Image 1 (cartoon, rainbow, N blue to C red):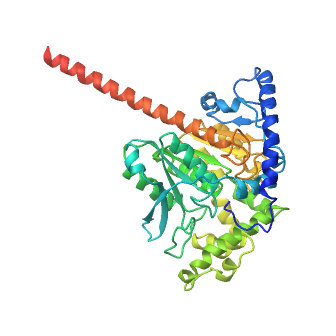
Image 2 (image 1 turned 90 degrees about the horizontal axis):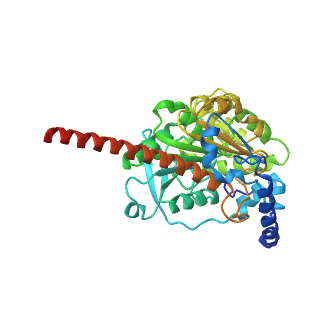
Image 3 (image 1 turned 30 degrees about the vertical axis):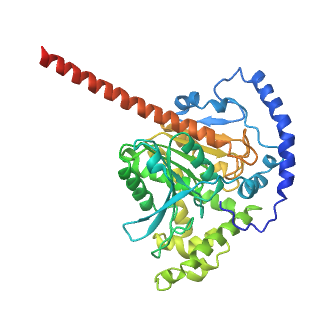
Length: 419
């Protein structure tokens, strides 16, 4: 979630700095206590739920999961406080980005933000990571920047995929992006893959970006060009997510996201003024909820009979069973926007390529825990990077082995010629 107006005044930054100093004293004690209690289960700490058909394959390489998940004091005690804190107070690393506008086959446009100078600094076979922000999000969001910086520090080439209208990306046709539309994702993967044909491709998505990513993996199935992927804060079942969106404090998020969507729409309203059919332009322009925006514009643009029809057929929970590449899903058990009950646990268990981690707390795009809390990178970032680097080492090892076998056959052929 971008820093949209929440109709809420967060406490001053000095308050959280005071809490941070207090936490420094408790962190060492918690770590010491863990060393005494972890011997019974060296694989995963009981504070974490881990499952999936690929759990036993990936768990040994995710060493941080042997430690307890300790939410930051006060901030991590309430899912809404954590969600809002991360949105307003998490640091945003300063990175120079170079923007590339990619024209799609339907004359639309998306923006790809690359780290400036990487064309000169990185070899062409460096692993390439595509980042997909959440609804209305883009390359300026703090959680995106932290992941970008971490991957880049490990020698990865990183590109942020800003969807139509998001992150300052232009809208050139009367169509936004949606949870159902995978055309732009396919074109972005093809484009970056063709630009760097020697690189292995990976992707990380958050929230709606995660939903789009998992649907893409399922749709592409065995033909997927990615070598691995990570899904974070994925709503998975959009029908369930919509139900919870209208309850209690969640209404604040609903109104904030609807306002952000309407703001993007109003910038490009002239593109839609001659649209015919079931479009309800005034409803979309003045939407008070995401559901109203989707009813007035999104579901009509993509050919759905109703909002519920759109949500039901755009849920990535339906795609898990068809995923054929390594996929790590990380969820927070108390996420207010991506409900715990919407996670397709059984399908993840049945898929030999998938693993799920559920933290007891974390809010939505929060995870204010770990050594960099409260202002630094989310708890998830080291886990994500360990997973991706493990996959890349496997790919590189397989390539080296293949090259060695090829060289050996070549030498044997030369020896036979000499004889």
